[in-house]
Length: 382
Ligand SMILES: [Fe+2]
Image 1 (cartoon, protein in one colour):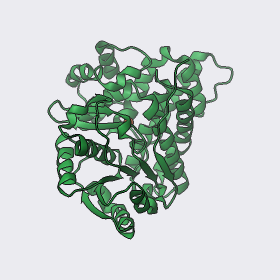
Image 2: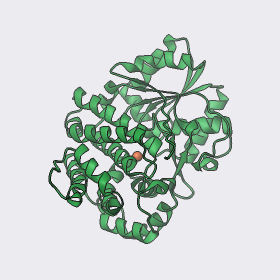
Image 3: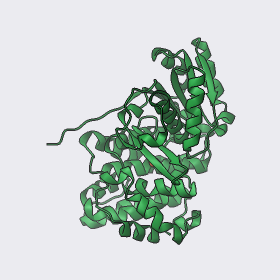
Image 4: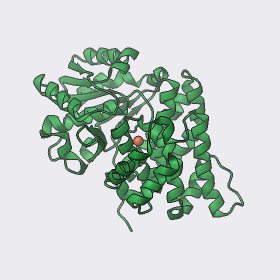
């Protein structure tokens, strides 16, 4: 029997949970907090609210927001300099997946030094990190619970994946009220990112009984509530259910790792700066078509979780129903079907494919894949 392991941070979930941020930082021993966010999140007012809760606990802070979506290597290096210059002793991220990933990268550099490239791959972080608190303002990245950190290497124009248990935040605070300020478009992207996490985790070679329960629960919640969450920004029931589903997906993939969809979309994000969830949503059914022969039974179970009726069907039909459900959901939330519609050109395919087979996420894909097969998948998705 394989040995199963499961790691997760302390999780605080619920409408109004943002109020716990000061108390959480204090419990972790912080005195001067390095708060990371981005200009878009600053406009929503959530950072000001978080600062109020820090002040309430008598904590000092520095706010750093010089970040773009898909955080860059030079940005996190600057963040680490600011952290050190101000003598900070804890990191707080208030933002989407990019902000949380940047906060993790700053934490790595703050206590380990060097360049973020030094930590690419699995288990390459030597020294402990400062305490990290993550407050997600979108539902989908899973960065608030994951042992992943993704940063763009601007020299190689690709996204590096760093995997280490050190990267799991100490505390994550998930407040569905924060999702009310997210646009429909971003809700669709991040929701489909979460669905990709759940599906890749459930198909992963590293899936366990502990990750399966979270992955299936995530798929079910996203299939049921994502269209409603996209349709109306203020539908708090749908947003809360999507926040739960995203959390389940994050717990699943952080422990089961991912697969070929993310191995390819990390390259798309690095080369074309494409929104991560949008790239995943477009590519997911094409990769599922490729992986299907390697995990027929798992796809049948996924079809049920996605709400498909599969009674009396042959296994192949049931498995195909899972892929059909993903295509339908993608259409319902208004995401295009082809990568050429969002900027991919045929000439990009060879480089993207060569880099994809070297990505850390490829290791747990259920079917072995060659560069030529990745090229064929990308041509089909073009
Ligand atoms: Fe993702």
